[in-house]
Amino acid sequence: MAGSTFQTNPFDLNKLLEDCHRGVLQLPDFQRSWVWDEDRIKSLIASVSRAFPVGALMALDTGGPVNFKPRPVEGAPPEAKLVAPQSLLLDGQQRMTSLYQVTLRGKVVETVTPKKKKVKRWFYIDIRKALDPSVDREETIVGVPEDRIVRTDFGRETVLDLSSPEREYASLMYPVFQAFDWDRWQDGFDQYWRGDTHEATRQQFRDFKRQVLENFKYYRVPVISLDRSTSKEAVCVVFEKVNTGGKPLDAFELVTAMYAASGYELRKDWYGDDGKKGRHRRLAEAMRAPGADTGILAGVANTDFLQATSLFFTRERRRAAERAGKQGKELPAVSGNRQSLLNLPREEYERYQTQVEGGFVQAAKFLHTLHIYRIFDLPYQSQIVPLAAILADIGDAWDHGANRAKFVRWYWNGVFGELYGSAVETRIARDFMEVPAWLTGGPEPSTVSETMFRADRLKTMRMRLSAAYKGVNALLMKEGAQDFRSGQKFDHAVFFGENVDIHHIFPQKWCKEHGIKASVYDSIINKTPLSYRTNRIVGGDAPSVYLAKLEKGDARTPAIDRDTLDGYLTSHLIDPAILRADDFEAFMDDRQKKLLALIERATGKAAYRGEEQEEGEDVEGDEDTMEAELIISGKE
Image 1 (cartoon, rainbow, N blue to C red):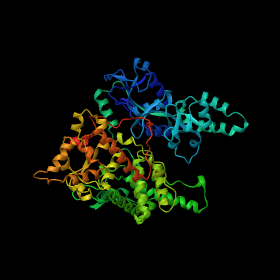
Image 2: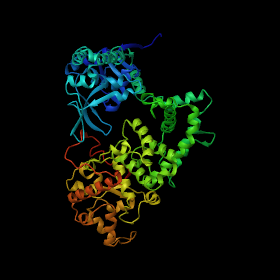
Image 3: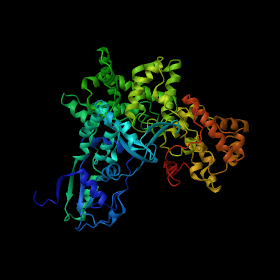
């Protein structure tokens, strides 16, 4: 096109990564740091391994009027800084850095887990699983610690050892950092599996090389190249567009387009039309408190609803296969993943939609019984999907006798096991199958059996983003905590009417004055639900001072008998004598034990009290960011 300042060409991925390594392709220095987490890296590896597109890159040729300071991609050798780059990457930094780190750099990758823990990982592809078409490719990508040994039971049991090439060969686990250079690894593999009896295993690797590794070798990426004559204004506009562009096409949009071909208006069904409330609005208003804009289900997305519906369809499809006598790999999976959403027939959506919507409404009622009233206080949005699907399936059976205790226990294990933070599609499907079976006498669902809460985790719960943090708050209210001032329990009416929120017991101001670090006093151990008016009385005083104020009362607040106030404190699992003595250390130790016992009762399992530290460094926040919501709102 005449006057065009850009061109699009496909480039070999291997060459682009080599250019990153040598410094020929760098970043403009204003690009943010590499931030991809472990799960997103696995997803990217999976896409390339299947030759799926991962999106175009955009680069600016250097030497023109735009003179940005260059910066090599993260992890490039020091020599790359000495090279004058030929191009700067405007869009695609996260993808290219991730692929460079895991395939070409040859060093352990520093990333973060879904729990926001800094970790070091090597990435492998499970050869057997990768050759199985029924296995989702992302499930074949494995991240292992720096020593390449995966352990369970807090380090006491080794479940996967890849610490030497021979152990890689034995486990049929291929290191992703050799994705472009497999000859030497294959030589060792063939030697390890030598002999006629292992010909099938050697053939497995040849199949893997052809079906998986060659996708890396021949992978091409479209690159939009802006030539060096592009003006600074144009570059800035383009950069802004590619970084803040429109909403990506998701499964709901694709399903909507497919249903429209047969005359069904899924968008109208979800969002409503002509003054009629859509399903999204109906769910958002379910169990809404007086005066509140929305209820606990306002965060339910259209894809969440499709996912719950897909669970019913795929389960029925599996049951039909079982009735037909099929077994093992012939049985279709029960799933709510993206592909199952795209495969959800319109008539099946219409078949289950009313039942599923009823399940979501029941989920809101269930959450209210646990004293979880606001989206802000919801431990996991993702756990609502199996919660709603299970309730839609079993109806009122969950609220009968022992079933209720089991069902509540399942929910709290998901929360305190922190199991719904990432890679949830498989867990959602398993819970949908396992929990109803458990209620009728079957084995414990994996969400219950796999949960192990660590005693020291209470000390690191400091941010509202933590599901377990929110869970402790709800448990305290459910167990009958009474407001320090009014003595009211925090039911639905009191929670909203009295503006209840979670606040410090030893106030921040007092803690700072006594040299206590935010990482200590911001722990959930030092927090509890209180009304807004009560927290104003607490202020920044020592506990002994604000307790005396509460006992004395004032023109607006009646005096409180000392024994009565002690009863209120005890309902929050606070030892009145320790609190009145302003003994912060004794208070923290005593309340940690009591909160731990509370969690153990909720999950039905003993917590782990060992000395071994959890892998990774906690990066939830720092003193400047903790409790930002409360400070901004003026509540603290």
